[in-house]
Image (cartoon, rainbow, N blue to C red; front, side):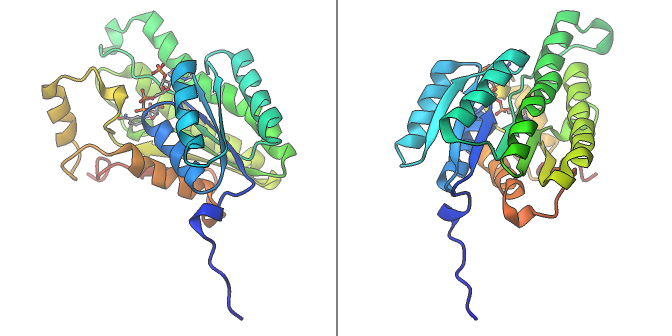
Length: 257
Ligand code: NDP
């Protein structure tokens, strides 16, 4: 008996995905790849204008896409964004909790409290608020998958970034716990740990800092948003059907030593 291979375009047909921080960098690359593979994609971002532009770009390629303004630090905004997704496309199956900020660089003893609060609110509480509202919708749709964007700093320390490192470690723990809770309901929850990636997040790095970051990667360069998107979309796909609660690196060898 011959089997017809699944075409990439059909892989996510009939599936709806929500991507937070989807207007820029890694989130935008994930949104593009999901749309190319047939998913209806909601681009959720703090910056509504950029989210609209990103969704329009996806639609111009024939994909089904929509934009919603979402501030992941605000549970009511997240709830409204998930509701918008379900109302617009009928269900939610896949989510990428990717919105994040870098925060300033300072040692722990001098780290400004307001920056700690802002980074943790965005990078950790934002993932919790997102899952808090996505999970009931995904369960109601019969199951699906969530990728939470952590970092290599989800398991390694990094001097000068206490809030970022603590939040990204928190994302790994939150992912594991939620995966235990929801595996039996056909929801896979996974964390991705990118190395330093060449996106607008690194916009404030001066050339010297950038060279230092590059030197931390045996691959000899920063990663691209598309390289992170490839792993993320694989993990969301049925090809990853036995992958639950784990943390997957895409880091040019950063964590190998
Ligand atoms: P970008 O800055 O390019 O994209 C992040 C997006 O998230 C932006 O559109 C930003 O909007 C949005 N955002 C920020 N705060 C909020 C919020 N409160 N609610 C909704 N959206 C928000 O960054 P990257 O693509 O590089 O980063 C994506 C994720 O990957 C982050 O979680 C980051 O920590 C993680 N990561 C990045 C690495 C890197 O080296 N680039 C390495 C490892 C992990 P706006 O521009 O308006 O602020």
